[in-house]
Amino acid sequence: MKIIMLGAPGAGKGTQAKMISEKYDIPHISTGDIFRANIKNGTELGKKAKSYMDQGLLVPDELVVDLVVDRVQQDDCTKGYILDGFPRTIPQAEALDAALGEDKIDYAIDIEVPDSNIVERMGGRRACVGCGATYHIVYNPTKEEGKCDKCGEALILRDDDKPETVQKRLDVYHEQTQPLIDHYTKAGSLVEFDGTLDINVVFENIIKVLG
Ligand code: ADP
Ligand code: ADP
Ligand code: ZN
Image (cartoon, rainbow, N blue to C red):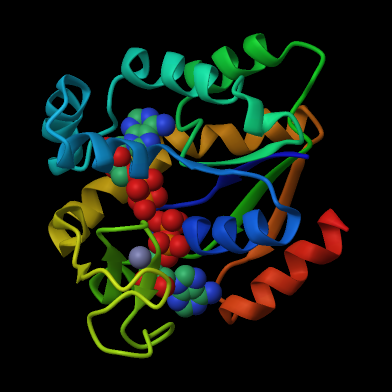
């Protein structure tokens, strides 16, 4: 089963992708996590990506497309995978379509959350520096404050989750990423979910569709 996650920054893509990945035992591939790991490790890719990410802009297509196309061709992806944060532009979607050929994406999961909810959500988001798990101080707190339930590492507030950067990311989303909804509707793979519901309810609704 090949899945992509669509939705605004903070819609809950990562949260749901992790749960789907565990239930169906397919890898969760997050381009944001890949970039953050590269930044942490001081790689060339990380250095290039950081300046865009800090401004709330998308990293240029040419820095992300080959990376994802290579990743989905690895052995652990033969049963499927879940792409979280890719594609984010029409050229990225077209490059993915071309790489997959007849072997198309099964579901493009669109999680709908109005912009007015997003800024508040992002302010409360906490991300694990170890495993990339995300929490929310109100909606999805950890058992022990500041410490990841899954791996025990420290939690941080991402630099790009500050309100002024979040607004920029939302603008970028509407301009560059939202057109993908049309793209995957035409391809017949779009499924939409109300992302304002409780995390577990959103998950149950997704599972009803995926089977
Ligand atoms: P979010 O939680 O907002 O969905 P991500 O962790 O997916 O954020 O991405 C963080 C940042 O990484 C984005 O704002 C963007 O700068 C960069 N990024 C991630 N994926 C892509 C992509 N497919 N194309 C371009 N930039 C990307
Ligand atoms: P994305 O990957 O789309 O940027 P995340 O999965 O990181 O989004 O979720 C953004 C923030 O909102 C996190 O703090 C997360 O714990 C919280 N969150 C996710 N889903 C919900 C939900 N259904 N209701 C309330 N908060 C949520
Ligand atoms: Zn962790």
